[in-house]
Image (cartoon, rainbow, N blue to C red; front, side):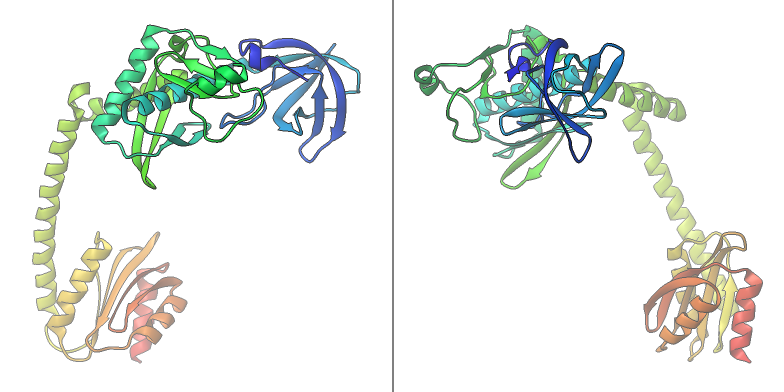
Length: 389
C-alpha cells in the first residue's frame, strides 16, 4: 500500500482502488491500494473525509493501521476493484498538523534548553498535552513559550527524510523506543529532530501561534497543556470576549479587570463581615427570647446552612436543659434547610422520622444534625406538634 500522507501531507484529493471491503464492528472496513488518509498513531488522531464513486459518497469515519494495512472504517460498503476518489477533511487535517508540529517545537526546545525528555504526548480534541521528564517553573514555561513563538516567526522549512542506516546511526534524534528498518525523521532545524510518522506543516510559520495554557506537576516532571494555530486564536478570542464582558460589568479598562475584581472581593468580604455581625446580634436577640428550658421550633428567613448552625447553637445554649432546638430557613415552594440540636441528645432516630415524614435528607452527630426537607411551614409545624402530643 502506498502511503501518500508520508510524502505529501498537503495532498487532500487522490485516486485509488478498493482492494477489500469487509463488515466491521463500527462500519465497513475498506482497504485501498493507496491512501492519503492518516491512520491513528504516534499520538496523532486519524483523518476523516470521504470516498467518492460517481454520485455515491462514502463517509470515512475512522482510519487505523492493522497488520501493515491502512483500514478505512466507512458508513457504506464499496465493491472490490472499484475506482474511488478520496477526499480528506482538510480543516481537521490542518488543525492536527498545527498541533502536532507545535508539539515538536515545544518538546525539542525543552530538550535543548533543559534536557527534558518527552515521555508522553496526547493530541486531544481541545488541547495538546506534553509530559516532560523534568519539572519546570512558571518562568521557564514562559521562556519556552516565547522561544517557541520566535521560532515560528522565523518560518523555517520543515525537513522530512528517510536516512539510510549509516546516516541514521550518526543522527541525534528524539525517539521514545528503539527503532529498526526504515525510519522517518521529521526535523524542525534549530528546534527539534524526531522520529515521527505523523503529518506536519511545511514550515514553522504555518503553526501560526503556540499558547501554553497550564503546567502542573506530573510524576517526576511536568504536564503542559497547550494549543496551536487556529485553536490558539479561538482560545484567545474566547478570553477576550469574556474579559470584555467583565470589563463592561465592572466599568474597568480591559487590562485593569484584575484590580477591579480585587476591589470587588475586598468589598464583598467587608459586606460579609457586616452581615455576620448583624446575624450574631439577631441570633443573640432570638436566643434571649427563648431563654429557659424547653423545646424550640423557629423559622428565620435568608439563612445559609452555616447561619442556621450558629442560630441553633445560640438558642440551644440559651434554652439549656434537655430540650431540643430546631431552626428552619427557606420557603414553601423550594423547601427548607434545617439545623437541629439537643445538648447530650440522641437525634439519629428522630432525624430519620423527620426526613421520612417531610421528604427530607440529612444527618450529623448524635446531638446535632443538619439537612433539608421538601415540605411547607405548616407541615413542619404539624410534625413537631404531633411529636409533642
